[in-house]
Structure formats: structure tokens, C-alpha cells
Length: 134
Image 1 (spheres, rainbow, N blue to C red):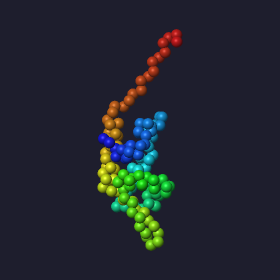
Image 2 (image 1 turned 135 degrees about the vertical axis):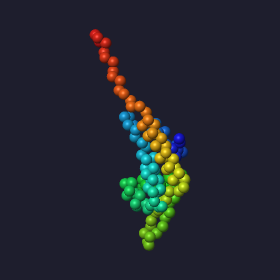
Image 3 (image 1 turned 60 degrees about the vertical axis):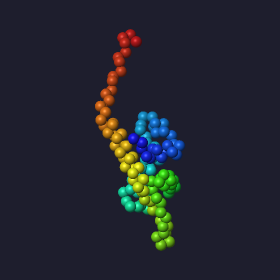
Image 4 (image 1 turned 90 degrees about the horizontal axis):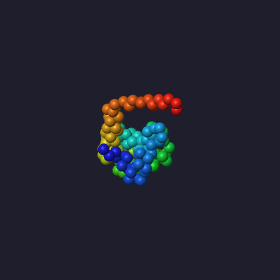
């Protein structure tokens, strides 16, 4: 199953996932994980304002803006700029395509988890004993 947010990384020319793994761990790409969080937060509500999203995800303004631009370019969110009196506010909403991509992403992750859960436990095989006299 093709993961929508991974496909977005591919379109942006990002390194394949297997090349982003760190030795000894399964470090996920931080940008991909951050975008999943953005879409999830936007999909849970009708819309969320920029400041609340920034604080919820503990990101800098610049970092959040960059991720939101990427998601907006992909058609996964809409960004609406309004004024509350004289104070500017930026609202983020998940689009139908964004909600669909999130559902597909969650399904793909569940599929991965299911595959790992259904595999038999790996048993360590002891190293052979050295031959006498060596």
C-alpha cells in the first residue's frame, strides 16, 4: 500500500525511507511524522488556528509554516487568513483529500504493525563454540 505522505516526500525528491534509517534504530523521517501530526490535528477539528497548532506540536513558527505550505501545495489542507479585530489569525483545515490521505496513512501503519505482530518471535541463535585447540 502506497503511503500518501511518503509519496509526497517522493514527489519532493526526498531520500527513500530505507536510506533514512539510522544504524541500530528505526528513526522515522521527522518531516513525515510532523506532517502526520499537522493533518491529524487539523482533521480532529473543523479548523485550528496557527498559534494553537504551533503550541500543540511544539514547533517554531518557521518550521510549522514550511510544513503547512508543503501540505497546502499537496492539497491536504487549506489555509485561511482572517482578522480578529486588528489581530491577524491563520486558520488551518484538513481538506477531503487530506482526511483521505490521513486514513490511508493510518491504514498503512496498521498494516505494518499487523505484519510485525503476526511474525513469530525471533530467537537468538548462540554462536558456535570454538574448536578445541584454537
